[in-house]
Length: 195
Ligand code: IMP
Image (cartoon, rainbow, N blue to C red):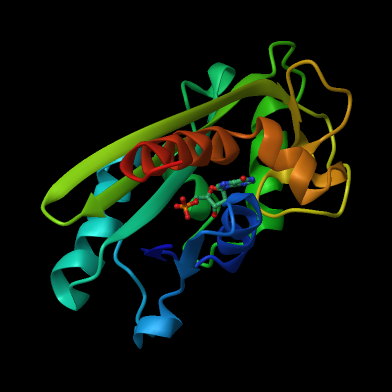
């Protein structure tokens, strides 16, 4: 049995990752280790934010852990909102307002290509490893679907005709940026133990 802390304040992410992990990898939440504070994410790239969030828990609480930092990169907006995805329309981190800002900026634009990107940073003893997942797709003209979180209602992954917000968690995990990065993490753990 592998036990690992997931350094995230985002319970949507926690739920998605928990569903995807095999039974013998037990996910430990920040509350489980007595951490009730907001984990800092003040860096300027998705990768460095991911490392910052995992490092914080490893150094302050001493647990092996991993973190996830993700963002939506829209081609026609020069990669915005990117690392600022959570706070795109303001520090209150309001998903509806973030979505409206994206839709307004893309209003009338033909090219609606975008990708979701996740970097998982894993601190295992003294080692730091990162795993990347990218999911390409298109931004819709209006929000569709009520599942998921964040920008899910306006993102249709390539090869599909529905948004992430119309998919079950299982469906989303199979193709999403986070799902792909978590698969790489699982493969890494599989190599560490006898099958
Ligand atoms: P962070 O990785 O917690 O900084 O996430 C940044 C923001 O990106 C979140 O607040 C969401 O708005 C958005 N985001 C991250 N992952 C997803 C996803 O899987 N679906 C939709 N939005 C996401």
